[in-house]
Picture (cartoon, rainbow, N blue to C red):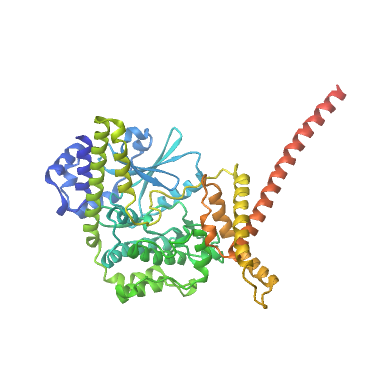
Length: 515
């Protein structure tokens, strides 16, 4: 009963008055002791949300004394995300629990960026706690979830009207960030959250960057490949306009359900994005000229010619957006589906407990599959991403495995090519030179992605069959270099340890002689 009231209460509390259930409304008000707050208008509730702060007393207590953790809602960058209630006020919040053995430098960066932001279009940060081996990061709760989550639940993409509404708030968030010289670097549908009022907010600053006054552009390759700007992949320096490219890709993602190139392996996409023409909607005639033009202005390959966030706010497609009311039906639909899934799961759990285990074990699994695999592959949602593993202890052996796999794939490709006669004009040295140039061009980018894949306990090499001979040569040469570097590092560590042991032996001997 308590949890059910809590669920209804959250929904009532965050929906506009048109969705309010009077009974649940009063039950929630009594439970949270915020009756007067619930009676306020939607605007007043939004204002109260902005003014919420954790008191000094709250921050000095154990987090369990301050919050009641209701449920786990998924995974964010570096940790699990939970729905929680501030006990004193009844305010619903999000708590990200991050293991302290995670890269604290990245976590501190994410907290710092959120702490410096104060915009209704950026997820708000309230405070942090240490509890046992976890860092608790307390943030604003966006009950409707990410755009990616909503598409999965509904098994539908967004209408043009819904896309415009989401983009308007997203661009406002980007305009705010870019004004602070901050780059998000991971704009996609999974990192745009909606609250129950239909307001879109930028989230997940785990890979965001800061441009200082003395640093006009950055060179670090980071982000999600399908959404990456060409200049980011090429490492020729990038600035806030990289987010504008990602916004254009996200626009296509919301309209079609997937970003361009999603059907190919990310490693191949890395080669294609800088070399292919800017992507467009698959069926541009199905969409308005304004929407097509908006995407075209975002997806300009030369960043110098690409538009900026403030200019996009004046684009006719955004000026015509209807605002939060355009997505309220979408949110209500997604919430109903989520509630039905939860109800079905609870029924199946009850059936499993009350029936013979052998005849009922399959039911919950089937339900979970139907809830998670909705028939459309939209890529990673905001709740499952940036799984970063910093340990390098197994890299040498994993690289050897991948090296062997690349050799096999390369040999197969050569056998196929050798069966066909080479044209008289074919020059092996020219081919090698072209491959070498391409390797230098993309070396750091692809190496970064390979390093991530090295940490995959069950690597998938099927994408290799899709690569051309040049691309296989490029990867093979990069792995050769990486293998050499790993061997040199291993040798250096060996000699350093050996020297320390020999020095200790020498000191012992010298000590014995002197004695």
